[in-house]
Amino acid sequence: MYAHAERDVRAALSGIVAVGTGVAAGELVALVVSPFASPYHAVGAFLVDHAPAWAREFAIDRFGTNDKPALLIGIAVAMLVLAAVAGLVQVRRPPWGLAVIVGFVVVAITAALTRPTVRALYVAPALVSGIVAGVVLVVLCRGATPRSDESPTDTGWSRRRFLGAVGVLAVASAVGAVVVRQVGRAGGVVAERMRLALPAPRTTAAAVPDGADVTLPGATPFMTDNATFYRIDTALQVPQLSTRDWQLRVHGMVDRELTLGWDDLMAIPAVERIITLTCVSNEVGGDLASNARWLGIPMTEILSRVGVHDDADMLLSTSVDGWTSGTPISAITDGRDAMLAFGMNGTPLPLEHGYPVRQVVPGLYGFVSACKWVVDWEITRFDRAEAYWTKRGWGVQAPIKTASRIDRPAPLSQHPPGRIVVAGTAWAQHRGIRGVEVRVDDGPWEPATLATEYSKDTWRQWMWGWDATPGQHTLYCRATDDTGAVQPERRVAPIPDGATGWHSRVFRIDQ
Image (cartoon, rainbow, N blue to C red; front, side, top):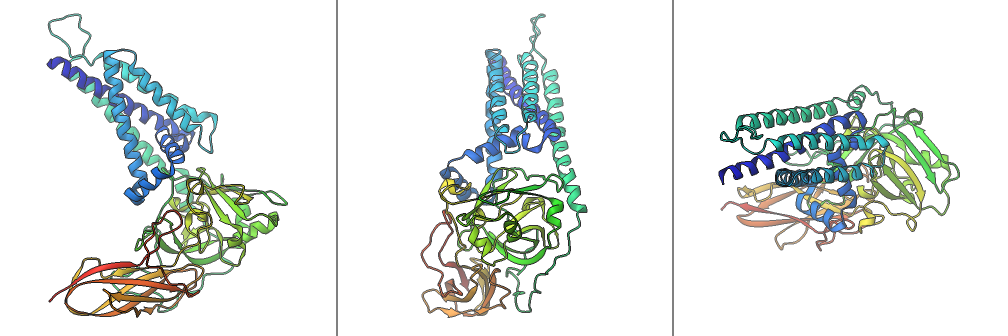
């Protein structure tokens, strides 16, 4: 019985090591072919692209910005279980354990062939992965049965030999994973970005006036640095697209189709603007809003060159990884600073924020406007085309809703009685913030002091002095935009077109 138990442990371990070695080999080949051909990430991207709306919304609600790591961990766990099964089956019913490996390969090839940038070589990493995993599985499973000293013809391996082989393969796989990670970090696109010189803008962003930034501990800074700017997208691996390879094809309901390269883009005079972006997934009081200085060209410069048909009302933008957004053409051509951006806070776009080129459209949630790594524009109509999230039941045009939040003091914090300065942030991009009010418990609404407005396309900070009395208190805030519309009290979930409701925080004031 003990021998059978050890055999099963060895068999399961053989399957896990075989699949791990195969995955490492496939990832190394993908370094040469394309990161999009990575079997592991291709399967993840396939699942993201084909996941039903309820599954995506569940992932966002449950894991928030960690939804992608959660998916990759889930894939890894599933692979480990199936790999262990492959080892057990291969030992007990050879060669049927190899059927599990073949299943892995079929799934990986299918996923790779659905990538938007697919080439024939995209099947190579999955094939190499399968061959390596199959060979390792057969070899290790032959030695999975413990050697018997009583049988001179026993083909099993000693425990030391088996563990030595498993250890060597595990270390080799780990080294391969490290190589893939380091080469990916130090790849040509990363080096290119570090060398890239941005053009000087024809018009610079207005200076941030005194009083626009509430410089209090715990308050949100007016400007968001690149490292802390929120990131929400469906990319399981950050696309690495060089300026040499970048192109933007413009087609559809236009008089003249157009393809722009990087040099063509640089020939258009650039502008610089400070604009606040907001994600539709932002909960009431959430932090999925950020403010940056963007450098790019007006999107209208390109639309004017192609001659948009009068009955077209939608710009369907496509990322290099296949994600799409649908933007109202009216929101691009109504005078707002809709940009094809290539600079962010004085540097080239970070890779995770769309390098080399992304869209920035004030006043619209990102899922209908902020296409990163953009490579294709189709001029069309909303009754003819649907973007990625619209197909999953989300909103169509999605203007950003008026919102406000309390940033300080911290929630559930304890304070002595007396004067407390409450501070927060409000936004209603492209409409502007007219006022913010604060209420303590069920008391009256009182006006907060607004920071100096920078523009209607940026958020606005606020402060309110509170003479706190002992006890537990709940503070609420609400904003009024420049149209006179007041932020509604009723709580509505972010999906499908943005959250509403008053933000609140609970504090304890000492006796």
